[in-house]
Length: 407
Image 1: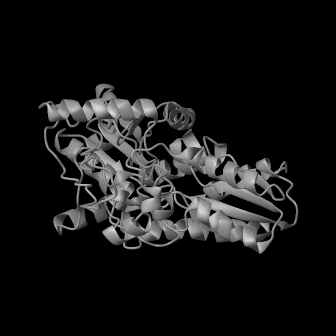
Image 2: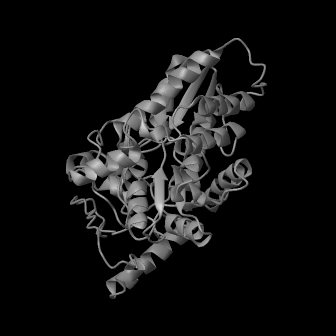
């Protein structure tokens, strides 16, 4: 038996992280479920940002337990920027600093049958139906799937593909996809358009693993629309959470690594990252997994968080920039909009995270519909002066304003 075969193995689940403590707790349930499948292996988890433990902490724990070979799995539905760039960057850097340690990076959850089955089960449950004995069709009902929405076209397309698969399987009268993030159509505008089809029962199903501010924003939009359209029955499907089929899907990804199936077929996420990094095609944000960011990712700040964030900025202005970034380097995210709409505060928030540039940022059904409702300043910085002029009635001088879904 080779030394590598004798090496102690361990499993690492890598998540994005959330400022919502319930989301952190729920992510931990996946690790607990996976631990039940692999009782003889150490299982740890960690986040890129916002949450603890971060990925480095989880990796440190495995190493402290004597692990020499780590099976790392991205706890993400689709392969967008975080799964393609940020997680492999953290893992590569960590591996380089620990000679003798081997980290193999698996695939995102993707549209495995187990994930589709879990999603459909949640939808049936929200309708009060038995997933094991479903009706032949649901022709009187429309399904609206809510995807995360990113600047990655392929990830957005996967959400739309999921919608079609589920619609074919379950037999809805109609189905479409809206998004809670940077792409279009946004949840509120999308629902407004889809209601014109005349369905009296609409199922809104967020394809999300865990709770968080985005889930609460989605629920807020649906509640608002339902209040304004009481002739329509709106049914909100719970997110996936630790459904047994979700744990099955995670186990499948671990098994792929164990069986060496990542060495064949299409290019792995890690190999793709290394190839693109060598070609200078990757913009790596080294802040990930290094510290807890004080600002929310996409939904704006609560009142208490805004006060905290203001104090952090003031500390930075007094020469304590390490509060924002203990590594002492800035990533230069200048979010000043250059628009004269009566608010003099600076948008150079230096809040340590970024989003990919999205070429359809100005789409009339996209993120611009969320201006004034807590859309992230990273997105605000992508809007042109022309767009901001057109939407100036939504801008009241504070782009860290809390979205109405959280009030």
